[in-house]
Image (cartoon, rainbow over all chains, first blue to last red; front, side, top):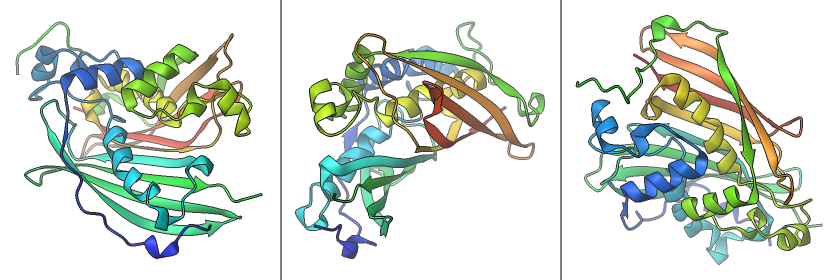
Amino acid sequence: MPVNADFQGRTYPPMEPYGVSAAKIREFAEAVGSADPVHTDVDAARARGYADVIAPPTFAVLIAQQCDAQLIADPDAGIDFSRVVHGEQKFVHHRPLTAGDSIVGTLHVDTVREAGGHAMVTTRTELATEGGEPVCTATSTIVIRGGE
Amino acid sequence: MPESTAVPRVRRAADVTVGDELPSTTIHVDRARLVQYAGASLDRNRIHWDEPFAKAVGLPDVIAHGMFTMGAAVTLVCDWVGDAGRVVEYGTRFTRPVVVPYESGADLEVSGVVKAVDPESRRVTVELTATAAGEKVLGRAVAVARLD
């Protein structure tokens, strides 16, 4: 089944808030090999002017991919997950994700297009605090490889 | 802001020139690392840790998460800047998978060069190059950091 082009322009309802924890930030920083104490040492983070430890630049993907799952798991979208390859990713940080943040992600399907027998879907997840302060814009392009 | 010996100074835009090279690094990637990243990121796709599964879906072997490679590569910029929270934009294309054999793992070689400096906003643009087995694995990997 081809990817459903009608999904272009769709916006999903905001997700349940994701609580950013110091423990998850530490775990993620260790996994990507970031030794910056700003991820693990609250005193170092405060010395730089942050309220608490902050997340590495790609941590937001963890929240954004939970938002993307709404689209990928939607049978009407026609996305075969076994054929999905991550094509592009971009983050624009309005401020660092910080331990203690309660973050709401809202998924937008920006483009759905076919190219060279593959489908390409670009999504944008706007991450904001529950109070509406913008924190990060995460843009992802997935490629759904065409059938044989 | 209090000074702390544990906290490095943030690099100054005035000390940076277009063409400056960041100190390059080699990051060793093995299966344990990918399992660690899978847990930390909640991306548990089997192609990143289950060799028979990866081969059954047509891959040469287990491959690293593109987001692992992206996250590991940007630590070069974070260390050079002196504060991971100053990375305000970061994007890339995933051009080739990093194949991670059981015995040898893979070596990810990461380098970076300054492409632009805006003295007004003190924003610098760094282009990253990441290679594994002699092939570029990231395309147009660009990070923007706000310096002092």
